Structure formats: C-alpha cells, structure tokens
Length: 66
Image 1: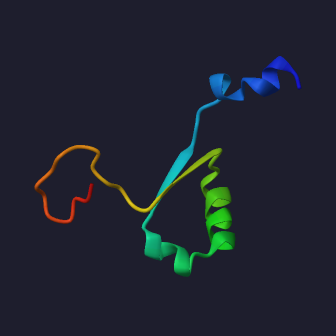
Image 2 (image 1 turned 90 degrees about the vertical axis):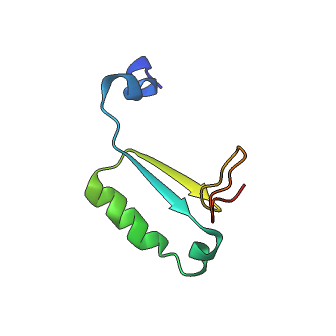
C-alpha cells in the first residue's frame, strides 16, 4: 500500500455519519438501507454507538442514564 493510500484522511475531508442506536433499535434495523443512505450521503466514515448515550458522570436528570 502506498503512502498516499495509507494517509487518505490527512488529504481529503471527512464526511462522517454517526448513528446512536438504542438496544431496541437492533430488532428491526435495515442494514441494506443504511448502506444505501451512506452511499447517497457520500460518507467515508461511519461510526455506530450502541446502547444509546449514557452519562459517565453523576446526574440527576430524568432519563439520563449512567
């Protein structure tokens, strides 16, 4: 692999899509549709967070899980 191929992220802009999935979202996820959407958005980075977003610090907010 050439130096240019290894370091593409240094020379080209990132089009990153981040998906935050709750545990229940996996029941009926349509992976093929997600891939089609990523292609339509011309994404070159895809990040998936699973189990939702939780707090890593003390919180008293309702539904803000730790």
